[in-house]
Image (tube, rainbow, N blue to C red):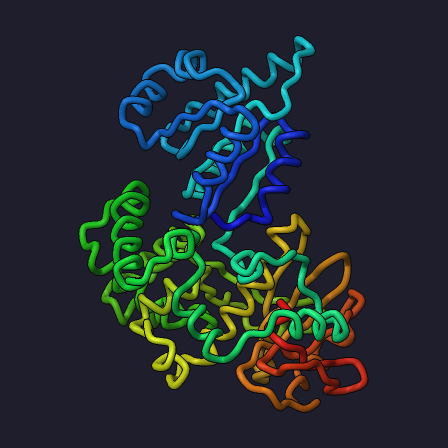
Length: 410
């Protein structure tokens, strides 16, 4: 079993807050983390995937929690929203009576929207929210994770110690990063993702909306996957599928709530906001799922396709986001594009500094390839080291303050 970096963040939450909520897409490893907590920390465990337990929780939440005392893990907790109020009551009672209430409950679920709605209504200030991603490449390789920033010296050291060839890169992109693939050494990747999509639609999506045409929703996912790394245009997708635009908006929100996609919002400040494109950019949170849905489930085919660049960009952005999320470091992520066609693939706001990152397939670049960075040189924030993340083996200067660095260093 691959060691998860984010486990340390979960342990810290248990030591400081009464409730820890672990959320993330289906099969990112939430249940595996729960099993570790049962074994190492003595938690009781119950899953609301069990119909009998779910019925008990729905019919009498208070009695359910008496039958399953803290410290308790409740898996798929979003299936019974009334539990949140009962948990809040128990936590508050323990605090009022000067009873230790740290680490009382660990809750998990894959429908972020329902979970956040219930948490905001009941347990604000009493809960730490931990969003789990699929595996990072560093986790797969057993390496220490740190937030990724462009630092030529550190980037060189990381890349030289842990190189990744072009063939390896595309193999990882197509295989994706769900833990089960690596824990069980799954070879039939197509079957894995076929089962994944079917289960996601049947068990997750169908709980949120009534899908009369599940094949149409899958077609929607396929079209969206082929556009990973691109601006989101609701009207075009609606026309391609034959549904209304507001239906596509609803379906996009479902994928975002289930952590299947991330919507990167455009970055703007007052000085540039009138010229900035306002549409978000779609990033599929797992390249393997996106490759399967796009019919690009062969590394060689993907590398030679017109989708090559956007999948490499998606891979790089995902790995950078994971590097912050897994280590518990706060950052905000954006992209920049204006009506003059100036674009920056990723804008990272971290510790009051902006880091501008271009994601490219290739090795040789020059200063003109980061000319878009000038758009944000007058930013209200300090501009930190920025540059291009690409296939180079070693870092090199593009200008006196921008660099090209190896993607192997993420």
